[in-house]
Amino acid sequence: TAEHGGRFDDHMGNEIDEQPAVAARVLDAFAGGIADGSLWRSLGLAGFDRIHRVVVLGCGTSLHAGIAIGRVFSDLGHLPVTALVASEASSFVPEPHTLVIAISQSGETADILRALDALSFPDRTLLALTNNPYSSLAREADAVIDCLAGVEIGVAATKTFVAQVMTGVAVALSGLCGSARVDRVDARAALEALTETPLRLDAALRGWSDSIPLLTEEFADASGFLFLGRGSGVVYAAEGALKLKELTYRWAEHQPAGELKHGPLALVENGTPVLAVDVGDRRLDINIAEVLARGGRVVRIAGVGPDPVGDLRPAPPWGPLEAVVPLQLFARSLAIRLDRNVDKPRNLAKSVTVD
Ligand code: AGP
Image (spheres, rainbow, N blue to C red):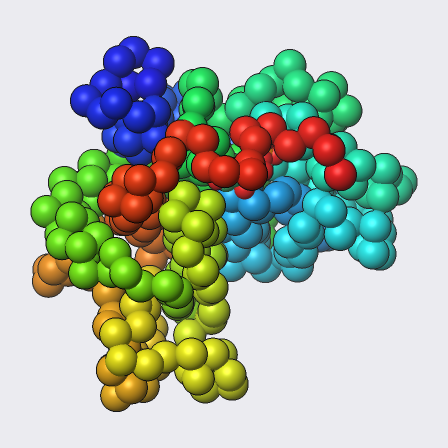
């Protein structure tokens, strides 16, 4: 691994490989405090039932992690959730009894630190979810949780994304389990799905390894990519597009698949690559058929491998976390094919401390 040596020459490859172990580490640390609500209480947060709204705050990949985490509060906790791009936080209208979850790998991102000023209103609780519990963000927060990813060297966030989602979901489920207004059956099923995640990440790493080189060759000359999803899959489509852009310098955009017909379908022509994150919403098939009818080339990301037969199960509220694996692998593989430096993409920095 990047921390301990690994099978690749680049850090990113090794950090992708580490993800099942990172997810298992998060579970070891936090899963025991979910069912009895003790993880939530140990953070010193107000009782779950006193929260009226959740704001997830972040930039880039960390914002994507926040959106995935936010779905646990909305789907299972029936709380309104706002996802806030940190650099746009000044337009937020404060409300009492809001839990703000600020998600930042580095804890030093200037946009996040500035956003905290805009979000300093009475009755606000700030939970920092970070890979650096000694960071500036952690110092500002009412409560801090370390996402335990270990040092990430590649500029592209990979294992920290997985660690953030796992940690944030653990905290959310712990709060929910201590709440009167939550369906225990749903919470138990979610905990079970979270527990399976290391295995699913591992299966995805193995399941996709043969087809990624083939997809890389097929799309080596493509100038633009579309990433689609529905429901909890949308944010993984967003993460796939972000990884592809930052690593390959090729254009990529993501859309909720239903939006295709409202404009982006005009981009699709013969051979246009379309990567679709499938969470079992059959309306996606209609969207995919529209793409195929125009000669687009569709890669369906469902289950833990390119052949999902026998593996289709409904995604948990935070979505199919293992779907990020093929998206990361593809972006890295195409970047290497195009002779890019996957650990240090041009124009980007690991920690963005300017406005
Ligand atoms: C993702 O691969 C990027 N490195 C970037 O989007 C990153 O997630 C963003 O800059 C936020 O950084 P942070 O988590 O340290 O706040």
